[in-house]
Amino acid sequence: MSTLISEGKTKKLYTTNDENIIKVAYTNHATALNGKRKEDIDQKGTLNNRISSLIFAYLAKNGIKTCFIEQLSETEQLNKKLTMIPLEVIIRNLASGSFQKKFGTDYLAELKQPVQEFCLKSDELDDPFMNNDQILALDIVTEDQIEELRQTAFKINTLLKELFIKANILLVDFKIEFGFDADGNIVLGDEISPDSCRLVDKDTKQSLDKDVFRKNLGDIIEGYQTVLARLEAEIN
Ligand code: C5P
Image (cartoon, rainbow, N blue to C red; front, side):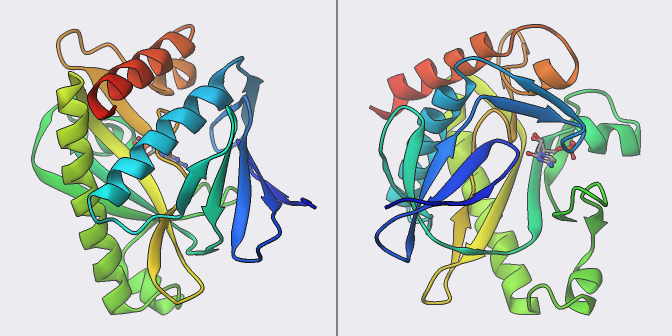
């Protein structure tokens, strides 16, 4: 028996026979502007499920605690059930998006060191930026947990940069989310896919991610297929 637990912007979560395990079904929904713009894009669910499964398995193999158990089908995977922390953890290697806008840098300007940011996960509030004091004041996590999130995010960044560069792709920035498992460990949850990362071809600087949808630059599927094919060639 499998019943729907919740439906997010791009994924549906279902119960399984084990209370500590959920089934995640990737849909073809694409959203921008925190859900204000919506479209269905054929194949997107399959591609993100396959890309995120590959990346989570790679991270687990390299010592990162993740929710990923196994890919079940073209659009579904089994995950450990987590109590999610309502923070988006962002890492930036090159300037783009809200960072580029906020600080007036050139697109893809080199940063002297990677930047880590926290945002509150809230569509109603448009995911506002949060500093450590604000996280502590609102009792979201403890000071030690903030540090663990930050250090784990940097470690994931190092592993992902190594992986993507082998695929001739620059990891510009990405967003990850964490939760607590049944034993109270902080574990990587949600997904890592071209929906949640900015990825550009190292040579041509062509976007291979959701920016193509956000900026109305055309078909996103070609870029997602390129990412999957290049990662499969590196990982398998
Ligand atoms: O828009 P911004 O530049 O702050 O986004 C930084 C990174 O976080 C991008 O890779 C973007 O895809 C990701 N992100 C996300 N979900 C959000 C906000 C940002 O996946 N709600």
